[in-house]
Image (cartoon, rainbow, N blue to C red; front, top):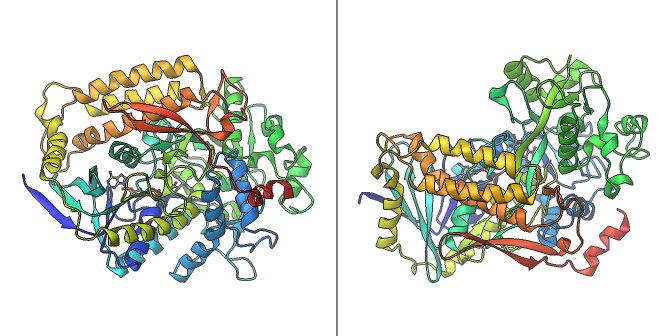
Length: 598
Ligand code: FAD
């Protein structure tokens, strides 16, 4: 078998914010480090991030601090977050933002010259450091330049299809060059997964083609657990029209900067959907909500800025009640609320996105928006301090890791998560590799097996086209494991997923190994199916509604479930099993934060 071979201390799979930050940390700790990514360097999902990075720097509000950020994050996640991750995240995010600035990132400024911070849903104070609505671009540009300048090796347009392990833990990874189809293997005692999310399991999503859950699936197959996979975030505002752009994100900054949601009767319906849990901190009248933009001390926040799960469910209900917009969404109006010049300056990407893709001038008319699958809170179960998974030598950071965001992520908390835990994962991976230097080796039989599995779709004839199977899976997840869930529908989804697995096992692809997208999708599909099964199984098991998981048949939030995590692991026959695990309890001095009313 023709195989390109490399040896490193640390291999990072994924070149988004988490992967690049991990690679920088591993390199700085003295590890020989490589980054592998499916697409071109710089094209990771992180580049699409618009609104900003949440960090309690206190630039807009001196009252802000890590304890308030910690509290907001836990409350936003409906207290199911791993408390230690939320604590580390809140404490370290400001340093990670300042460090980015030291490395050359240019953030928007306050009139005093400090890094400007903007409002976002669920954050008590304005705390998102931003660069217009193109924050992810600046973040990735900065990290990418540093990675390359440090001399980290980058394998781009290269997909990892398997993790390699022995009885002691990780030994490396196996993959293929997308352009030539040739195989490549990396021997390494430490692998950091930073592969992002699972959005392509759903029909309507803000995610790009890369988000096929590869890292989730690779970790599961290597023996790690996936925690709380039932929690999938549907962002309330994706584009709904024209069909070709359905799902593309409309940033929350539109609401942070004054935009409001209206139904077909022109009503600001979010006032009808304020849950008791957030009533104390949410404005009761339109007047109070509007005053908040200018006087945040003496007024409460508009209900449009409730956490995403609340807003997405409200939109879903309005549409179902027949009060939606012509194309099945609701209206997001900033045109009547802010001057055109303000909108163009604060939201340049949104202005162009609507102008070019939908022929809508958002300074003159309302946008049509609706929920879109955006983010997965569930992911690889990791140690909070080191990002280590249960398999020795395996680490996970960024969207692929679980625990940090509980049942619902607050906007802006992903970019900070990537930096905080990417750095920790890279450093811990380097430390682990130093202990295992010179003792790992790749087993020839495992390499041959990985190659055989990758080539199998070429060997079969008369099978289905991978695109048809992907569409059927996306429709299944959309219809049966979407925003509102019931047991019979999820049981139906699991039966369909089982049938889809058989279809995937019989897939065949045409042509040869040189740049063959059909073959690439055939190799991604088993990952997508495995994570979809985890989502459906965990969602069926959790008999309550919380954050990004709403059960029509169990509408209440149940305190007992609030102490319970669900962990998916692989069974010997290749299936998935879900087990309950007690939620780690926070120490009393942290629990006090919730009594302080900070
Ligand atoms: P990514 O940035 O997606 O990187 C994943 C990497 O893994 C890619 O390089 C990919 O090529 C690689 N990869 C995947 N599978 C493989 C494989 N098998 N082999 C090799 N490489 C692989 N969050 C915020 O905090 N603030 C925001 O304002 C914000 N705005 C957003 C706007 C949009 C439109 C979207 C979609 C998301 C937004 N988010 C935001 C969420 C945030 O951007 C993502 O959660 C975050 O960027 C994920 O980063 P990551 O490093 O985990 O993964």
